[in-house]
Length: 150
Image (cartoon, rainbow, N blue to C red; front, side, top):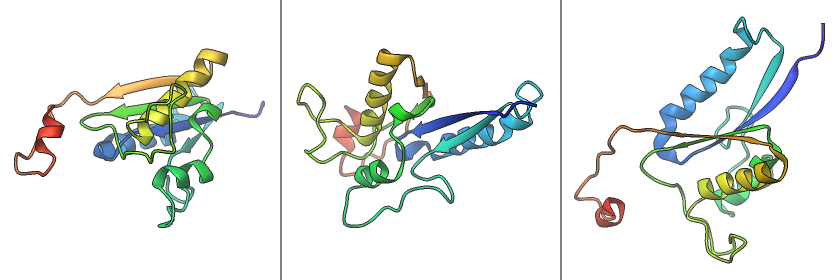
């Protein structure tokens, strides 16, 4: 019997899709039991919040810096799953810049663009983007209501 194929799957998403991240993780953990996959593929989940393997989120550095120091980049993985809904994620410091010099909107955007650039060069990773389509409730009393509404 041949050794199973190992695929690293990077989960990229902001914090408003925690349920969807959990579903993706559950599906990946159950795929080896599927009759079609049958232990021929082993999935390694790469995610900042992966139980027992996420990077330490030190108070002295930004969350994205901790992720970059403790995890493979999306471009180094085989599959990147991006899950979006109502927000793009945590803003990055000014030191994170796109090749054209503009600032990334969030760590999630950086992760997506890193994966997409690699995929254009070498056809890997496979980049899958999922969007939650349920309307997002907005609190009109929230301090950033107008910004989120626009």
